[in-house]
Image (cartoon, rainbow, N blue to C red; front, side, top):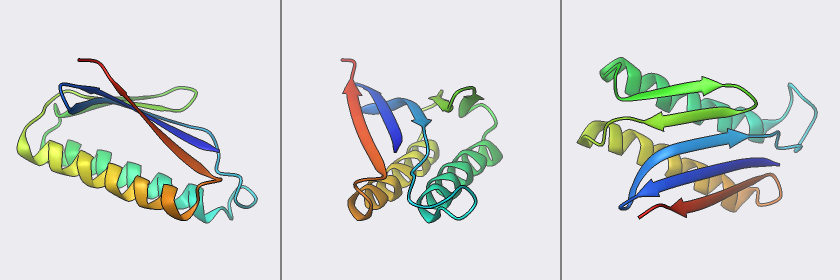
Length: 104
């Protein structure tokens, strides 16, 4: 299962961790993994293309994304990514799980 952990501060997403494998199909044929990867990578690349200081990421034992700016464009890109991941979670609840943590 792919596990996505969102950490929010005052309602704003500050950190996203994506780990695991969907196990929907074999590696290389898994449409859920492909959809999650495509959604996340496209969102990270778009944000960095617009502003290279908008976020940072580390790919160690999963992908850890730190959202460094909460400007309008970065927020829209990240919120769109989360919306798309939640739609995948609705369609494939056995393969992707999203948890939110609030640090107020």
